[in-house]
Length: 500
Image 1: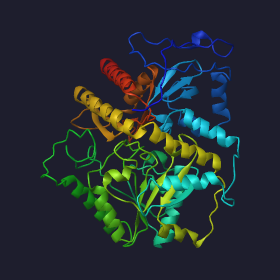
Image 2: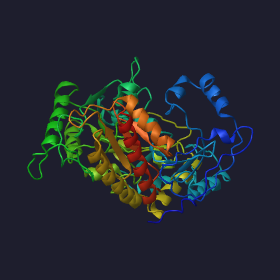
Image 3: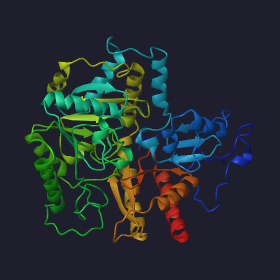
């Protein structure tokens, strides 16, 4: 696979200076597996002290910033390169969460950095009231990655904004109002998209997302139906499956729940159906094969359009396809995206048909920063880099290996209930025991989570109960990195089981 060299082995050190004394760097445990090498020696950190940063975080940042701080002892990130991050003390981490599934081709990827620097020297910002080359070059390039009739692009600044605008466009086009999403979904945090998002953690006691209805998520591990042949994944659940060849009973049952939603909770005509090809924040939840195909048919029969939220699954992350919806053998009417589109640069997009886009012209919409030339130059470079570095194939190869090896750990440990995903969109669901499938308590999840971090790996958490570890790294990770993580994960589970 054509990946950039990712690092020479060098001893991690703590920078000297008034703000970073050697004693502040916690010694690495002697029995931790050796971290893969890295060629980059990070710059010396001479900035604000950790104590001062936390003081500002508490006093001047919105309290929500403290609430979402991941660890008991926060990670103070100073620098990044490809799949690696360094903290202010010089400790190196393998980033297997890509800063919330956002860094697609690697932190500070040289090709993307070069494209950004080139555009910075030319012009930083124009708007859609002027015709700027990067916008049009990128829109044409992005559209080329989609099948007909998905050829019309509108650029935004985030996934929430893209989904918010998709709601408006769907309602304008269909002249209907109601929108359906899955329980456990996450589609954004704006006042409108909070209606699409179906997780109590994100809900506020105020009116939001009017006209949004949630239907049962066809989760073949945690849901009432599912078996060992249901999903398009290298790893299946351990639940027994008695379905006849080529027929999925679980799919039929979940489609029955969707039909019941149509009969009880929405008008006869709806505006749209939103679905992530694989749920992200929900914990890499996958649906039975052919579920989306049948769901799309039912939605369209009721006047609705089908919207694929590719914020986390797009740009080759699932390995087998460039877009997650392609793995379901469907073509949506609209696709929303963000995160990996700009490798961490704030950007989002909607791609739809000419017919739906024309309905948007009934009013006037203006986005000051959408289509910013700097954002377009970065995003264009990301598309080129994915192709040149073989990132999609790497996602498939390394991701499949990770899942199959994690499945061996699932069979070894009682508290690992499920391993699932495609490519580098992976979820590991933790349980009290395999028989009950009850979620592992948050305290236990936190213990394991912190242990993994202390041994040099950053991962994420998700799921309705915070019970799923999320592994969604930059697509430049190597087999050596995967082996290192597997050793760390195995050790962290072993450590927890011994303490228990």
